[in-house]
Length: 262
Picture 1: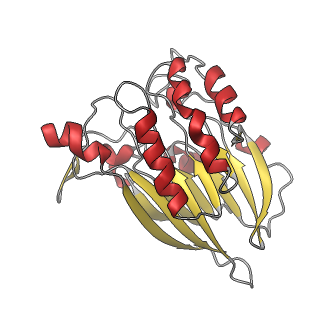
Picture 2: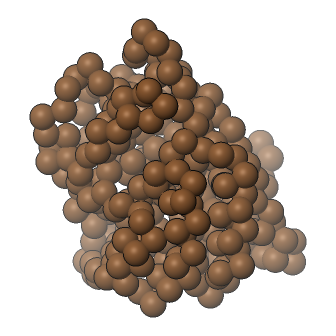
Picture 3: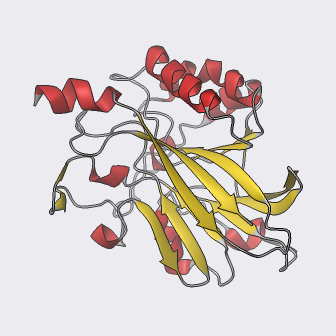
């Protein structure tokens, strides 16, 4: 109990994945740092975030993507993110919002609360662009692609049709969305989807996997890591923070470095 509550949640792991899209003849490569589910608040604050930032900067990413669930529970917890301007000084940085920003869950949409005000102001002040059913046509290191960011699915605020309006089919597409449940209504032709939300279950045992149910309609089949899906691939981060219980076991917090071959 002591190890799971006080030791492993601080043991950040740098995970690496190679993702081949193979959509362009030039075979361009892009290094993406993907971080999700911060949940800063009662257990993790400035010091933890600064450690995350330092480890991310050391990787020298070309692009930094933040996958939502910044706060633990309270809107005021957004105050911990003022140092994220250190990331934007290194690489273009984009973010989406998650269910904790709206107090929503996949099985209960009765008490949606918008807790995004201070967070949006704070992220904007650091130079991070929040994508809410929007797309950006980016060219980084000669690689041209669309980044599509969706608002929270559990709060029923996502609108893919709006976000993907008038996109050129031949240009690769990366979707940033908080919950992997997006693939249940995913349009055909998405090359890569980046999600979080599951925390990998937080508490896992060898050979058994997550002890708690995964908080999605997809369930245990999609808990963490890289998956092949119809028309592309999906990567699920196990996140950097915790919700509910403060503990992790056999499921260290992760910063994901994705080497994407276009």
